[in-house]
Length: 540
View (spheres, helix red, strand yellow):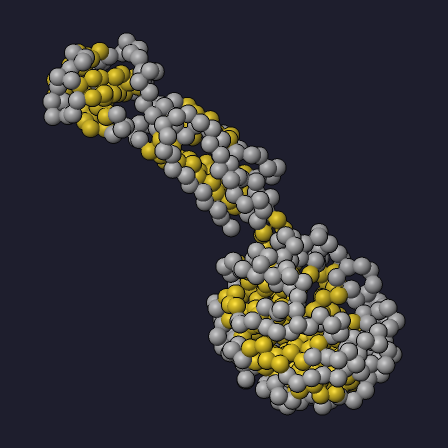
């Protein structure tokens, strides 16, 4: 990431000039591969599977019918996949929760070809029993989610299935025994995703769905006992709606809704008034080509919920900065190397206190993560004189950050010493306007650039003869004679610093006609191989 600040000077005075960037920047590492053998990787989730306090990774991959988990040492070093099941035919979704109330995190899956919602009992160390089928009646099961629906303290299960357009839930008795399917809706045409949270602020868990064929984002009000009202449409303008998520986007305490829609390349959010009445679609991006997944997390630790997306056709994992009021910045690409990006998730993988990002990508069979860290770059100001005198050495300084390097670039001058450090000396030439830039690169390869415009001043007060040459007459009415050593370069420079005449003299007595030049103050520069001298000339 690069920030460029350039300022124009208008007052011809000496000053110490400061330029400043934003307080912090977010840097994501290059893709860290967890697995390249999750064939047609479709879904990811993260939770502490083995009870060691670290966040482990889960995946569902449709091409090999697998549900797997990956052990994290807590520092983001992630081991090879460990099988939970290879019997989830066309596994589409995975999540985790304590299903049987024993304190261990169990795993759930939805698999498309066998219409199955299943769970897998964890012994607490990451060893799983064979699948326990919750339902084999979710025709084209696409999505599974687990949460307490009826307020009895037990984790129930939700499903979305696309071939029967169904959103359903399954009552858990607390020991992992599930009741029959309870249909919430059979009107979600090609149901792709299900999610649940309290939408209307009444303390019970409502349900959301995204359905791809009718372009719909909808919610269903729960009476607290698992009885659901009719579909309430949030939007029917999400063309190819594949993903729905909910969180407070604008900081007003209400749960807003997010969507990803593949056909219109759109990430959008919908403001909730707190009672489940939603405003119009607010587009975050229409540049996520094949948007299949949306998620939200506070990426930059500013207390606001930012948005993440995975888009299939451009292989992109991206995030969007939220100002806290629901106004989002431009897409910031985390990776464009997730071939067929299908799912995105965020959680702290390496226990450093910030939200890292996970992706599943279908075409390259890949599960990967991206480390989030604040850039260490502290380049926020250039201190130094923006009005140096010609051929004066001036010093420029930026704050020093441990581990950073500093590349200084000048126009109209030359770095004499200090390049690579936070302090340089620069010799300025007579060219009127120049600039100095510094690029800081920190230990994470973050770069930030700051530029300062320089106006090079020819100071009348400091221009004195050093005896190397004489001008006569001075003042002059136009024709002057310059007496100097032979083989000198002579320049006549106007008050603006522009060279109006240049002569390479072979003699020690050079005549120059300036009769066509306006009256005023000029400067004569005589340069030899060993010396540069400047004197004032007055034309009258």
